[in-house]
Length: 493
Image (cartoon, rainbow, N blue to C red; front, side, top):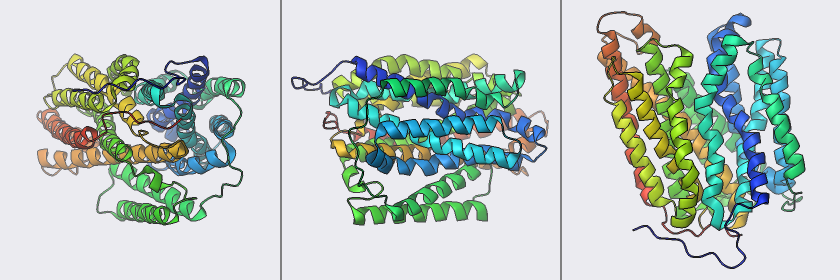
């Protein structure tokens, strides 16, 4: 039975008042382009390589540099918010992102473009956790679900709109407009922030940076994400590049955890504040769920392009129903989470996503687009229930001073989880291709170029086997999700 929430104490705000609404507008405006930029450039790599007369492996660093900068910036969020205030860091991060976008559009060489993408990523990496921290502090316990629904919107739109927008720009405009398009929207976000955000009152000028922590966690996280990304791009799991990156990253992250637990107060992320059942189960479930769903969003366009021979833009459209489905359920999920708690809503969402994924395990080369899009719509319905529920649940029982640490920690886990899922699905797909097509290296392009009568069916079998792995990870995600506390004891106001 679902446990309803206790009535809020007198004076506790339960509706979305103008102050919270304005804050939500500011955050969504600022975050949406930074999230889109994680995917929008992917479809332009060929055009960039041709324009700069360089190899794909070199131009890939335009994406990799941005991803690593995002990863390295996230750990700085908690300390910077404590030291300088959330409003100040929001404006600084947004300014870095706008400046980086302008410079990327003006880039004159591959090295300059990569450097400017890193600058863009440093600003973009802090925007989501800083914005999330501001919203959680303002919302309090009774409005957490609705606030997390708002935060989830940009993250949901990115994988759907990014490839579509990037493809449209590459087809009809110069690639430089992928960066210029950020400027007017982010300028509006900057103006809205200056006018709507209240002045910082929660800051500690004496907060000292945990230098040891930052030297361990930021490069460790970057190395881990890089190694997983390389695996996702086809690097061998026994190769020096993958093993060195992943092992070094894991060692540094573990070393940081040991350091933070020993240091306690003043650690870059105060892990002792996050040792609650709600945080560990909700973020554990979200880690596994992110791995499965991001892996899925990589597999669908690959299936469309390699097996069905569709264009990048057409394959991108297959993901669009997922965004539509998520937007439908997100509109009601927040209120339900605030009233009933997030455990059973998130569990129901995982079950729905699993049902859609099982449909994908039945694909064959002749399967119509309507079946794939229908399955993605169902997956989107479930996703719209999961993301707000688990994000809200992760804050249950945490004191107000732990909000920044919780936000930083959760964003790190989600980023690593998404990279982990992409890597796992790419590796499983390669192994499946070698199993289905004897003598194949696992390379998708090589396998598809054989042009035998049986190649599409064999490749489809490889994809459906990989979808079963996605389903298995979803089942695993149910275990921590079902352990999330059922009643809300949210962030103390």
